[in-house]
Image (cartoon, rainbow, N blue to C red; front, side, top):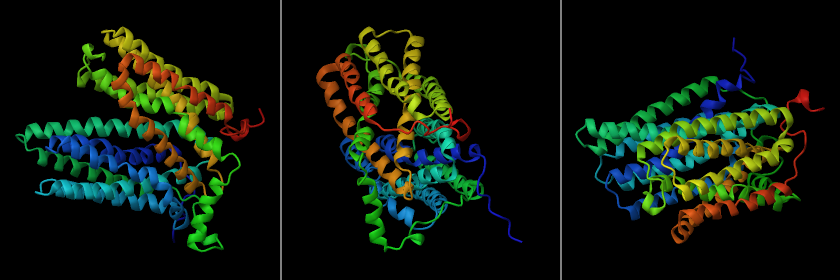
Length: 432
């Protein structure tokens, strides 16, 4: 007798692991690969050129997001792509000791980038299908926190492991990184096995094409058209592109600022000290901010907390104005400043994540959420591209003042956003 498949499970069993698994391949492709190629002797020119192109799948993923909606379930896509990513990481490990490793590995990373971006589409859609609206609000801080923990794991734990292996192998760098990628591949295949077993089977998780009267391409065009035909589409796009306009510039220059010597306007921290600031204190503050943000929205709704979250994500940027002008050498003070900024970011980003969920509601929520995340990526990529040039031209002191000025668009788009007062609340509290 076949056992009935569970339509739901405790979200703590799968939301943290799902979003950790979502973040790992992204950080490997976008950040760890840069460090790995540098250690393997690739020139800065080639590293910058080829790894920058790897970002493209996350920007253009809305182009194929309707197909994820149309064919099979989101659960199927998640499990399949986690297996694919695990195999891809194993392929990277295999090619690194080969003579033509750079070309081979870049090709595999391209493959991983597309697989990872598609996994993001499926995972985000599944999250909205498997949880009630109030649960989505309550766990939005959890998902962003574990995604960020994956970032720290990739740039911290994996790099440390590779460094230790380099030393223990007598400087055999290719071997060290091959073993590191092998370990990561095995770890990711465990994610595949775990989620195949533990992810529930929501009754609403079904392919849209099966219920559509149109053909594949008409359904594709219809899905995109529904999103861009919204009467408030200009406001939506403005919010997606400009809510984090200041943060998208700040995030690119924080680490260089902390690492640069005092004579260049920086803080003069060592690599290890920066790791402590962001890898321990920063991640703790980010986690608390994200979890608190999700919790309070589930009580009072997004509209009630929107302005507090807008202030939270923007005003703490002022700590870097203080740090750049005073350059305090007290490590505790530096940690407190970064903790405040990270807490504010974690709390304030909750509004952005929930806004994407809000505007994605409907029959094509997976594809529409992917469109939102594509604009989110674009909103981070474009300001980040010119932030370094601005800092080089005006120095750290004036750059962080410019960042504060750049918070204005975030306040303007928040004022234009239309949000149902009940959105995000627990069902039993919606009459309040």
